[in-house]
Length: 206
Image (cartoon, rainbow, N blue to C red; front, side, top):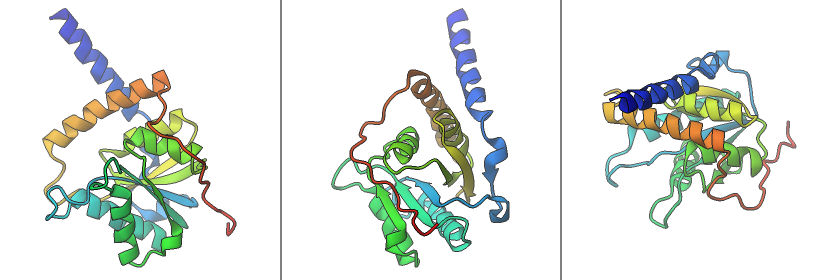
């Protein structure tokens, strides 16, 4: 019982540690954001079953569009999982954005953003990000801000809307566990699954 209680307390402590980062850098109002050149859109599946549109995906894309059209960012880096030929989050994100009028040459695809930790580190090391605005839902934003702060990236987060039905209990539990993994990754300095050649985003029009 003592061991179980100790583990639970450590898990709660780690979550509170992650949540303590960046609460003052999570924004719902575009006017409050400081402009950045790149908006980093964190990936999620576009469809859970190949038929229905994933509301989390759609809301993130719409938030990215608002951010770009407002002029708060000039370029979008879409980072997600492309672990098989049948599953390609960055491609789906880029297709959605282009269909809604975002210029294709202002979108860069990161095919190895398997996890939020990987997306942030690859953003810095592969795409040359020193700062960015992360686009995701509020429940997810603290983890991205925590990783950014620990890895030397100046990160703000623009919050996408939650689905109408709200964030499910199972997803909240999953995020609770993901924060623990992110903290372990930071402490152990885990490296992304893939790095590859540098593809710094061109900022010549700044």
